[in-house]
Image (cartoon, rainbow, N blue to C red; front, side, top):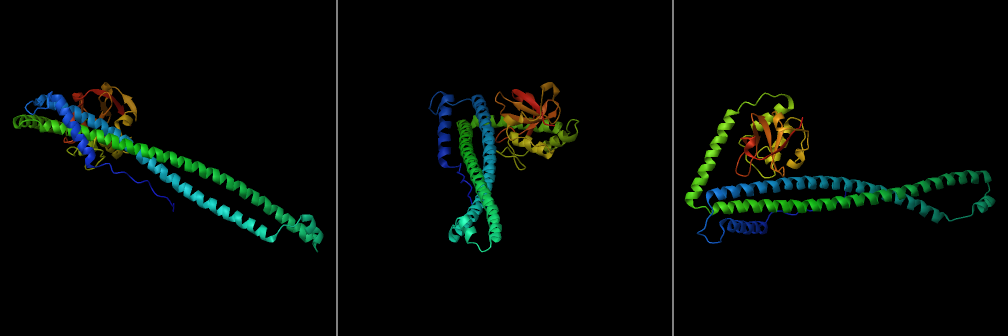
Length: 346
């Protein structure tokens, strides 16, 4: 068993980050209202537009967080493998050194006598020659042991260098995780602060609009209860996505209790036996690119110039996706957001 310790994981939660996020949110509110005075409030339309923007930016940070987390997981696994291998090689190296040391000790204790003198003093020259031949072979084996020891040392030094590189990658990925999570929290806190500035009447109208949209979503989901004709793996992926309808959006989640956008598409295609990468940025390169006019159920559809959102196409110009915090997995038209591209995993 390897005698090493895994690197400690830093906690990424805490009151300091949230306090900073709320402070930035307050600054954002002031920027929208044009003044810090309480009597000047943004309109519900302004709030809605800005909240949508903040939530979209939070999702972009979420996808970057997912990518950094995947890199951290891969670096940690590689580091563990390298450390295990280094520990095994260290044990073999120590065993070789001990064996070589035992030979050297035995030679020292036996003393050194010139071979010609040993032959001259030997009562049986034939026996001496036989022993000399054995000693020569032993010397050759000893030389091979020394050479092997040198190779093991070089290999161990290389493994330790690779382990250090992976440790550096892990620390960098962990820093990126904290940074992207902080950005997402700032954006969500800014959205909350904007909503908190609405008057009671404005908040009522805002929530009524949200409720109307939710009813439209439910109506669309009912109309699309039966998936468009498809078969094979794509059919299994679409079926999984239908089964996820109503599940909550959960930051960084891949199911089955909740999902973020790329977590949903990854889980759907995993159920079909296809392994997709974790983020929108990498999923768009998984499979064959298709145009909007070529879309068939099961294709992945991507949105925004930064490719920060993804859904699973189900036919009829619609998709199933995990929209944002507070909005569960749902059916939506693909023209609801700026289209960025599509890919067919299988």
